[in-house]
Structure formats: C-alpha cells, structure tokens
Image 1 (tube, rainbow, N blue to C red):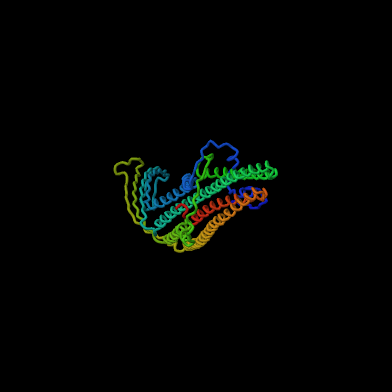
Image 2 (cartoon, helix red, strand yellow; image 1 turned 60 degrees about the vertical axis):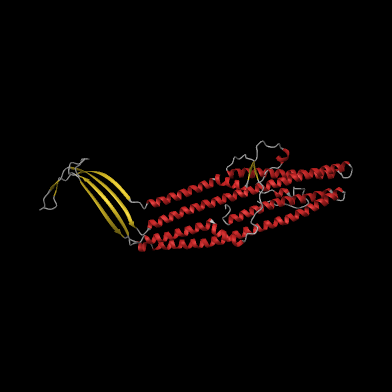
Length: 457
C-alpha cells in the first residue's frame, strides 16, 4: 500500500505530511527518541546481499528443486522402459490322478496312469523391442521437455523471491528515510520552541504561540511512533523472508538511483520475449504436444520384438532329477505384430492432441500480448516515477524558500505562529515525499526488470 500525504494546512506538522508518508510495512519512531538504544547491533544489508539471502534460504525454491528432481526421475523411468525385459521363474506342480486308465478310442492302446505326479518347470525369458513406431523415443523426449519446464518454473520462482525481497527492502528504506526526516523536523521544532519561549519571556509573543509549537512537536512524535511500529513489522517480515532470526534489527543501505533512464520500450519488449519463463515454458509444452501427436500416430504402426527363452522341464518329481531325467530347451524368436485396429480407434485421440496443440498456440499468443501490456505499463510507471522526482525537487526548492521567508517574517513579528508551522510542515512533507519518490522509482525500475525477465541478471 503506497503512502498518501495530506498537504492540508489545517492539520499539524508532519501529522499531515509524515503519517501519510508511512509505507505499508514500517516501524515505531518513538523508540528512537524516548527509549534507550538497543544493545543488539543492527545488521546492515545491501540490496544484492538481501536478494542472495532470500534466494539461498527460500523454502519455495527448495520445493521447486524437489519438482525438478521428480521430473528427472520420471525421465529416467521412461529411459528404463527402453531396456530389455527379463523374467525368470521356477514352478513346482503336483497332480492327483483319479483316472488310472486313459484310452483315446476303443481300438487305441490304453495308457496306465499313476495315482499322482510331480514336476518342476523353470523358465527364463528376455525380450527386446526393436521397433515400436518410435514411441519410446517420443516418450523420452517429452519427459526431458517436462524436466526443462520444471527448471523454468524454478527460475520463475527465484525471480519472484528476488522481487519480494526487493519490495520489502525498498519499503524498509522508505521508512528509514522518513525517520531521518522526522528526526530533522524534531530538531527544527525544538529550535522553534526555544525561540518562541524567548519571545514569550520578552513579551513579544503570547503563550499560545509556544503551545502551538509544542503541539506541533507532539504530532511529529506521533508520526514517528507510527513509522517505528511499521518499521518493526517490515523488519520482522523481511527477516522471515531472508531466513534470518526474527529479532534481527535490519538496516538497509542507501539505494542508488535507477541507471536505466534511457532504455527504450522496444528493447524492453524484446528482452521480455527472449527471457520470460512463461513463453519458454509454452514453447517446451508445444514441443511435447508435437511428440504426443507423433506417439499416437506411431501407436498404429507395426512392432518388432526379439526374444530369447529358456525352459527346464523336470517331470521326475525330485528337485534334483536323475541323469537324463530332465529336458532343457532354449529358443530365440522374432515377433512382428500389428494392432491395426489403432488405425480407427486412435482417430479421436489424434483429434484431441491436435486441439491441445492449437490451444497451446493460442495461449502463447495471448501470453505474448499480456507480457507486452505488462512491460508497457511498468515502463510508463517507471517514467512517471522519474518525473515525480524532478517535480518534487522543484517543490522542495520552493518549500525551502517559503520556509526561510516565513521564518524571517515570524522573527520580525510579521507572520503568525500558524504561518510559521505551515511553512515548516510543507517543507518537511516535501522532503519526505522526495525520499518516497526516489524509493518508488527504484522499485518501479526493478518491477520493470522483473517484467522483462532480467531482475536477476
């Protein structure tokens, strides 16, 4: 939530300008003026260090890595399907035979059967698919593409983490800068109170003037309290995001002004088209859709399978057969098979696969349009942020001149205490607005980089 500064002269100093300058996420300033300094040393962080910590300690990225590992395992599983199939078994059979004599016909020779029989049968089989319409090849390619998609998703998650860290960093920076301006304002108000008290003692001004400046100081302190409370919230959340202890007292360093003032919209759009993970993911999914179509077509082709089988037959009833009491047979074979019913049963599967590919193409076109819109929107907001800095710099020069003028007029008993307070309020409000605008411009620049897929570059 962006701060809104109310410039109405009817509200007291900094209660009008600074409270609204507090950005979502900031911390209590009262402690800075009324409480003793904490024993804990503050931890200073640059933006780059914060991003590195956020990426290094992110639980989201650890989850993303497990998804990559899962995709790689699935790819390995598909590769395993191309290996020869082999099986072995050894079976024992026992038969009870109630029929003692078996005769095929009246003229035939009768067979006298035993009451029971035992036999052992061992088999060993190895099969290798020589050709199956390249279905395994397409399956491997699709699994590899999905592993690449998982990597792209992880990269996108990394960029999201970097952006969240950057946003929190700039929020904390806004609050720190606002607190500095509030501290300067308090010093200025204290000087004004001393001057008003001297004037009162000399009978130049009324007690009411002194009370107005003291009320002004109270309002500034309330503003500081809001800032400090919000700062504590931001620091706590940032510690969680960076994987640091929650009680760390973070202090962010001065943020350099954006260095991309002269970038063109066309180059930014080109960068987004080349770097955004969404488009790369859709491209990989499109390739996987092509493989799916090829695989369905391949399912209607003949298959060729080579096999080797071995059999050990032991009808003796003993686990270890007597000499010449068992039979061992080895066979090799080549099987050609064609499930030609796939020619008509796969027709609708093929139609569905073609529709899915069309959907992916349309989704890519829609995503491209959305990315262009996003880049343009962020680009325009970035330019606006730069313009705001220039306007506010001019406003500060005007507010400083007005403040000097009102200070002189008040000293010379030409202006009232209210006029003096209003001039001072406008000056410090403009100073805070400038600090916020600089931070907003920095965040707008990184938002623009994120929309082009280059925030981590």
